[in-house]
Image (cartoon, rainbow, N blue to C red; front, side, top):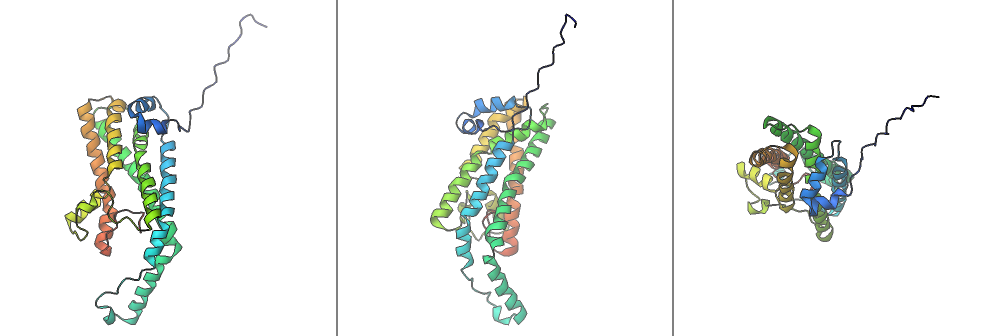
Length: 262
């Protein structure tokens, strides 16, 4: 036995997967919380994204009574309905009956809500990371994905408020956000603008404010430059989010402002 003992290296501490303690902090102490998140080199986006996913599914369930009630309302046939062939008339009635199918009441809205949570996060995180990298930032992609995910936590409050409104009124929200400032019969670019404004509300502005606070901290570039690049990425993402509602309105002559209200 030798006099010198070989010291074993210290055990590596496994990175934390859940960061629940940051949830109230991002809402009430955003700058302090973002500074703490900056030190997280691992993927810390799982906690806010899981919370948003669960709230989006709850919102889909809360909207089910409103969709069932709407499916029971038989719309008036088109003016030239009596001139349609009998087969097309039967197809029309079958299509109206399908509106009460559980797939349209529960499954499709839930899937649409999940897409509304995850796709904007992926798009905005990728665009923001690309813009900041071109702007001179040396941050990695993981921290950008963390920042966008945690900045999106106020959208969970939106889901809660909308879910309560659906349960109380049992009526679909026809003009969310600022879309009510434009007429429902808008067309062309006004229709696209209405689809964009449907995404803009207090909770969306709250998310943007958190991004503007966090991007200079995470990127290390000048504040004015970081803010400009952030707003550019946000506006591109907002325009892409409006495309589904815009094309749905153009094709179906029925404006659907949010993908989870069928």
